[in-house]
Length: 212
Image 1 (cartoon, rainbow, N blue to C red):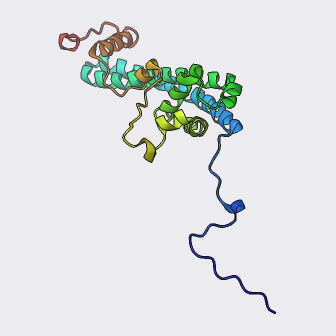
Image 2: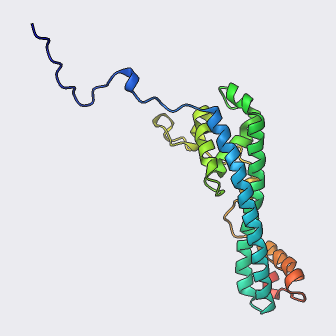
C-alpha cells in the first residue's frame, strides 16, 4: 500500500517550533561593545568640536573687527551650541564609563536599579540627539533588558495606550541644558562675544541695543 502524500501546507500555518523566530534578548557582551565604541566615538567628536570652536572663534573675531556685529551675533549662537554639545559628550562619556563599571550589577538585576536610573535614562535620551550612533545600539539593548526603559523610549504598546511617558524622567538636567535647541540668551551671547573680542578683536565693545 502506497503512503499517503502530505497535502500542501496552508498559508499562515505555523511551522515547527525550531523554525520560529525568537524574540530578541538582551546580550551583555553586545551592550558592553556598544558602550565602548560609543566612548571611542565621543573622543573623536570632542576633538572635532574643539577644532570647530577654535575656527569659529577666529571667524567671529574677524567679523567684530570688520564691524559686522549682527553676523557675529548669529555665528556665536552656533558656537554656543557647538560648545554645549561638547560638554554634553563629556557627561555622556561619564555615564558610559559608569555603566561599564557596574555592568555585572546591570546584568544580574531584572528591574532597573535606582542608582542606575539617571545614567541609563540619560544615555537613552541622548542616543538620537548627540551624534553618537553607537548609543542607539546600547539603547536597544537596555530596552530589551528593562521594561521600565522600554516603556519610556519604545513604541507605545496597546496596553499602555493613553499613557504618554515623559522621556526626560531621570535624565540629567545639565545634559538636557547642553543639548537644548533653544536660542541662547542675549546675556550669554554678549558674554561670548566679549570673550572672543578680548583675544581676536581688542577694543571691541557691544552696541547699546545689543546689551539692553
